Every structure is written in structure tokens, then in C-alpha cells.
Amino acid sequence: MSNSSASPVPAPRRTAVLLLAGLLLVACSMRSPITGVGPVLPLLQDDLRLSAAAAGALTSLPLVAFAASSLVVPRVAARLGARATLVLAMLLLTAGSAVRWVPGVVPLFAGTALLGIAIAVANVLMPALIRAEFPGRIPLLTSGYVVLMQVAGSLASGTTVPLAQSAAGGWRTALVVWAAPALLAAVLWLPLVRGRGGAGQAAPRTRTPWRSPLAWAVTAFMGTQSMLFYVLLSWLATIARDRSGLDATTSGVLLSELQVLGVVGSLLVPALAGRSVRRTRWVAVAATLSSAAGIVLLLLAPSLAVVAVGFIGLGGGGTVVLALAAISARAADGPTAAALSGMAQAVGYLAAAVGPVVFGALHEGTGGWVVPLAALAVVAVVQLVPAWTAHRDAVVEGVVEGVAGRDGDR
Image (cartoon, rainbow, N blue to C red; front, side):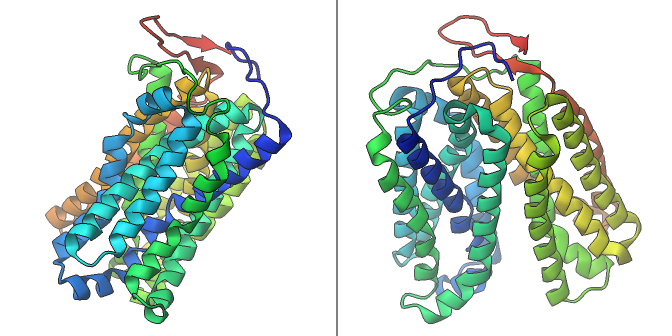
């Protein structure tokens, strides 16, 4: 695909291998320190005497950190270099995990906030680094890192409790081990921080593209798919128990189905879309329709919850890859991708943090799940608009040092 800016010079093979290995290790670090908390939350509450409200605040703290930090990341990366910034983020994630190992409520919350900020940096920079370092492999690498992120997160969910029961230090040790990939990624990338995109090299200071309609389309697509996923992650098991009559164990299996089929959807997207902008556009619409159909089916036919969650999982897994790939593909260059990523993820994770709260409030206010699910179906249908417009054959041009940007045809 052509681009309005000059193509980056490919990195030497050895550097490219180290970059790729580092990116994959970062992907393994981006969810597991968070998803490991839920399963040990009862142990954590008993040990620290946390109230239900405090426990809820702990689980939502990383999302708040994501939203609050995302807009700052491109400025830091412009000053330090993208590679160096990501190395510092992985070291911060390791430090935050270590702080959580210290006994007490304050270290637990402080460490969680630190690693939330670190993961926010990774969230923003991964699409930008893929755009800058591997511009010809955006869909494939985006799918790969999303799948690794999902698999590592699921692995943390499934193994943290057994580890907490067997390891010295209990749940603290079970949580700190998930910082290992981050530390390894930082060590692996240290020799690369003075290369292209590393420390000591001036980078363009690209403004957040608030005035770009295309940037807002990408942001809306990221925001809607994030809201759908985190609402269902928070409430699906309860909905299945209340409306479908499933027991707690089967409801948990349904939640696992959502995540496993999300991985399948994430793997299918690159194969279906290829490198064609036109095909990617239609795949985005199809994935969105799959999510919408599953939510409507969950609303109208609770007894078919297993089928409904299958549609939602496939669609949601596809849309998260497409949303992240759109950040890379719609940006004219690496610094613009970082600015666009900061914008899309700040808004997206704000929606992710607010969505479950609003959904729960609708349930409490109406005394049932019909109105909340109907509202969620409306969000899924509305997502069709940014699914189409975010994948048009154009790029967001960066606004650098007062020079006006534009959306240009590719």
C-alpha cells in the first residue's frame, strides 16, 4: 500500500529479530498482571480486609490509568524515542509488580497504578512501533500480539490461584511472576535504544489529531469495541446466571468461551482481510455484525447463550485486532501513529471504564437485563459506522510544529 510519507528504511535482520522478540514479550506482559488479580481477589480481600468497593476500585484502577496516561505517551516518546520509552515502561511494570509484593494496602494500590501506567505506554506504543518498524506486516503482527496478549491473560487467570496456593508468599508471589516477560523484554531491548526510534535521536513532535474526522472514526471504533468487551467481561457471567438459569460454574465456562473464541477471531482477521483496504473494510463490518447479532440473540433468546457468546467472541476478537491495526494503517508515519494511538486509547479505555458502571446502573434502575442488553445492542449497531469509515483508503497526516495536517487519500 502506498503512503504519503517516505517508507522507513528496513532494520538490519538481527535488529529486526530482536525488535520482534521484544514486541512479543511486551505483548505477554500487557494483560497478565491485570487478569491474574480477579481469581485471587477473595484471598486478597481476606488477607487485607478489603471491602467490596475497595476490591472493585482495585480492578478498575488499571483502566483509569490507561485512560489518564495515554495522551501523555506520544510526548514522552517524542522526547526519549519510542524504543527507549517502551523499555522504561517495561521496567516500570516490573517495579510496580514488585511494589505489589510488599505487604499492605497502600503498596498494593500504588503498585497496581504503576503497572497500569506502564501498560498504558505499551498500549499506545505497540501500534506505533509496528507501523514504524514493520510497515509491511501491520495486520499480521497486530493479530499476533493481540493473540499473545489474550493467551497470556487467560493463562494468568487460570494459573494464579494454584500458584498462590503452592508458592511461598501466596498471592503476592503469584502476581509478581507475571512481570518476568516485561523484565526480559527490557533487557532484550536495551542494546537497541540508541538505534532508530531509540534514545538520543530527535523525533517529530506530533500533536494529537483532534480535528481529523478520520482520527475520530478510528477512535470511535476503538471506543465502542472496548466498551462492548469490558461490559461483557464484567457482567456476562451474571447475565447468564440470571437470564439463562446457568449455575456459577457453567457461567464461568461461558466467559472462557468468550475469550477463547476471541482468540480465534483475532487469528481469522489477517487471513480474511489480507493487505486489501477494501477487504479489511468489509471484514470490519462483518465482525461488528457478528458482535451485534450475538448481543441481540442474548437479549431475545437467553436459552441460546452459548451460541450468542460464540458470535460475540468471534466478532469481538476480530474488532480488537482491526481497531489496533487501523491505528497503525491510518497513520502517515510512526510519530503520527503514536499520537493517534494515544487519542484512540484514551477515549477507548475511558469508555471501557465507564461502560460497565453505566450498564450495572441500568440493570439496577430497571430491575432486569432487557434494557441494559438493548442499550448494548444499540452500541454494537452504532459501531458499524466507524467500522466502515475507520477503514477507508486514507491516512491521518501528523500536525508537526504548527504545520496544519490533513486526511489524505492513499
